[in-house]
Length: 316
Image (cartoon, rainbow, N blue to C red; front, side):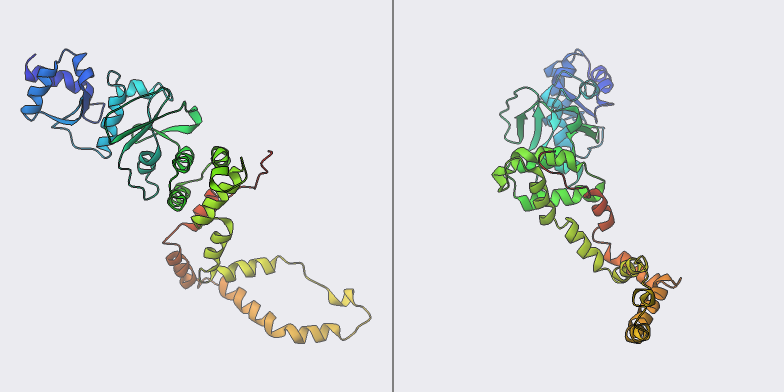
């Protein structure tokens, strides 16, 4: 087959596969290994990995090595065919999944995948783990099947990663959107005992990770309270909802008690009124500005929402 004809045939695949094609897919279209070698030598193709090529005219894409390694798992099948067969195909997992989700600071020096059947490779930059994954633990990100953030976090704990690093992954995930903490606790249950918690107590291990990441309830409350103006706003709102006490009715036989109490608490009441007024006035731009500045580092409100749920007992 002539080079021009070969490139046209390959384009049918590369156009829907990040500009990539496997040698097995090329062979199915009548393009031999010799043709691929010639196209590579001429600069028309770029060899990415054993048996995986990219059209030189296609731009390099993010996670290119990971995509090439994923295509090599089942080189005869097209990407869309494998995506239609989820979760019964190789799924990006572990450190590679954390990188694909953009959570945590792990190096991801290898391309990691979870496959339903045993796979072997001689490539030092590829790692397989064998485990059938339920559909609820698999999603698609940037065109690649990947373990959910919850399953990714549990896999990292299972891999004996430094828990402080895993806590960073959890914190980043919580900032992105709400997590399914019930599912995460369920996945962490079998890993609790080896991490110093009662057997099966996924809640305890999850709480440990939340505390280490500084996003447990107490830590979030502390950060929120430290925002200038916000603590006063919460306090004023709380006090405004307290029931009012009619001391005269409570102590009808002590005529002077109302006057004595009024005089004693007058400075505090005056201060509270002034504080409430300052919060309620339209001129709260400085408070809002300081709150926004304090919230720049982390979206604590999103974290609180993402990591909030009622504590469940192990027996539930």
